[in-house]
Image (cartoon, rainbow, N blue to C red):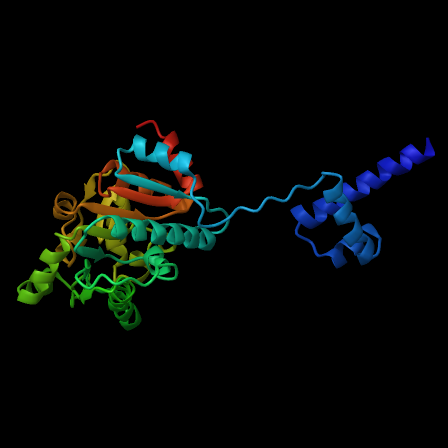
Length: 323
């Protein structure tokens, strides 16, 4: 009986040490202090926990694709394609995994079709895509900026740099929209739109074969546009009041996908989203993270994108929606 009791006590110790290490995220030294054993014994106990099957360690790879979820998502929303990255963890990890998957998807699209132009919007995920995108030689490919620059000097520089970097990776020719994304007022916007070169770039952008777009929310943490884009508090309040949940190229929409009009429309210098939807062969939306789930749902319901690259948790939530 004494041996059985000791065995049970040992199991209790193993479980306690494992819980403190794997669930409470405490160091082995701290666990030794709490339990009253040496750090060496903590190490041996953790090893014992795995040997006894009390602890199972699973590694989830980034960049892997859940093909079943991808197929279900594509079918539910009648997309040209959907790619669901096996991404878990923090927002940063999810963004990286979605970007890695998006880079692979873009590579396959360009290699399997004779596209002549790619439009580039703006966003954190698009920036991250460049870290995973190989270098190609598509010398006849046009890389077109779809939205003016916004925010302070640093962000304005980065908006142009994004187009330049995509053209460098794809081996094509860049075309820049040398205007702010949001002019100071409607009169200033009209002055920009009277410029022949700006009108020409916007027309090119609205007729690209493939558009690469981020899907931004209306909070700082879910939208680079809100974070950097010269919006007044009353303009953001108007969007919230009108139930906007997200934006593509500065055009806002609600969770049902209906376009949300606001005073910002009179300042925006970017592609007309309805014209883009009519003309482009593909509009590839790239976004992940549950905090963006309604934003992505609105983009899907509005048919503002033809393809979606997202993560597992968002995909499951989207599929669970009733319409």
